[in-house]
Image (cartoon, rainbow over all chains, first blue to last red):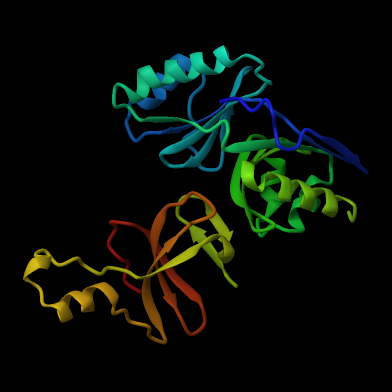
Length: 187
Length: 91
């Protein structure tokens, strides 16, 4: 279900750095090893699941992130304010993929919280608690990384240089939010 | 700490991975015909040698895929990484 009562509901600005929670948005996990899967997703969403590792596909409405060779995360680019929109999309995908044994469709809207980080110093901020090497990642538009930030599992989606969406599990979101804000004061 | 080249995601820090112990242990075809000792041998007993060892690893905080690794346990030098189901390369 869509998160209307989100855990953070804040926007903070620091020197060359803006952090805000972006909710409610739809998030759907897609899994398949079938060949027809890509074409089906393309037909339903007008977006092709990326085959290249650590990359994403983006259109006007949705972003599709590579998570593993048979797993992708779909999320809406804009806030969704009607339950019907989410249910329609989930039903459409479920009926044409899960029901026909083409793959698995799981609604993970409640599972993840999306935090947008904006500014030139976001990579310095994340590097404070993350073992990931951001050198290639930051200049590659649409790159994706699953890693740990301050011992917390995250998915990072680099929309553009200096603009990044971070997905964190809902139960860890407040903790990570506190850590991000605390670390932001020192960069 | 060392860097592991995940066959799916690329080079990542060791802290993103978890070790799954010795690789290439074959499950007995007829477990019911084994004695308790033989079953315990298969289930629990693992080599822990100082030197080159075949291991299973999981990219737990990344793509969550399992893969095999040939690692020297004395100096953490990685000799080869290969996917599950592939034949181990000659080192």
